[in-house]
Length: 239
Image (cartoon, rainbow, N blue to C red; front, side):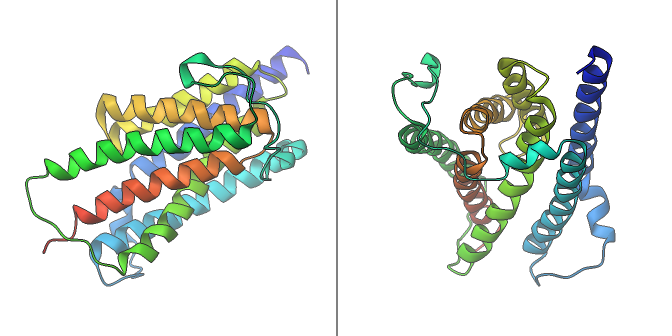
């Protein structure tokens, strides 16, 4: 591919992802004006409306990517889990075992770290809250849609557009940065949120690149969202 066309493709990809990220970060400013009641509870209704907006934007980006790069369709699958996970010492990946094994190990340790952070957030919350059993189904639904939307935006769009024109490390780092920065205003937030999301983004991007599919990335992402949204529900429903 000509150099100028490659550069243009990179710029368009980054701009699209940044624009969608900016829209979602400002969602709280415009969602209240959308008079749709999906749930009687204001907190849940706000979350559901956000998920609707994220799904719409993620779907639009997915369609654009498929139109620009039809070969990106190959990523819309579980992926080859029997391929070796290439060595990466700082992640504890020895380069001798398949992604099928490494996925479970990474999911466990990442979830342990996320869970520990969320427990601390709950522990030091200034108020006392409660959790209701019926929240579980809502949490699962929101976690599925949120992880799907973000994987489409930060993995499928970036990998689908850039894998063929950028080196692997550059794709992984770009995905990590674009995924991590918006979490400065997310949950967890601040610098810690950016670091945690950035590391997670790198791992999910590595899994996507090496297995040629989104299965592992979506699965691990879903587990983290279940933990995070569970904590959010605990901290937003007073006894």
